[in-house]
Figure 1 (cartoon, rainbow, N blue to C red):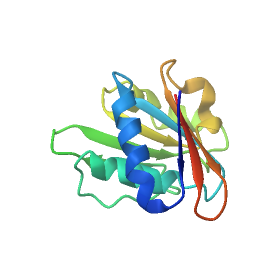
Figure 2: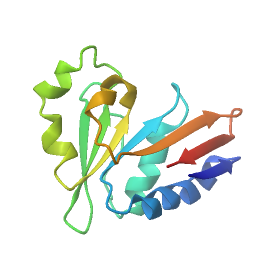
Figure 3: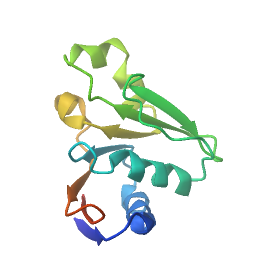
Length: 138
């Protein structure tokens, strides 16, 4: 596990780089933290560092956003906050995304915990104060 403490949003590049570096063959990353912890902001930095020029926004209502990167691969960004029943994830075919070989970045993974692949990377975000955050990556 790697722990990174930042004191401003400008330091998020260090966290994004660490997530990318630690991915290895894993393709699903679960972002865990309360409302307003900075999950989407970190995902925006990760997507940008992977070379995408797409606009990254939280897919709160759409559930899934797709971004493209220069390698031709896709990045899928999920927000399961509004999922009330795990069957909803089955309905949109979560398996096709999680096992596609493309990177899947998941907000609110607690809503679909049992569906996450065994090798899912976890990024835990703790809000220390208005600007400071602690990130635990494993």
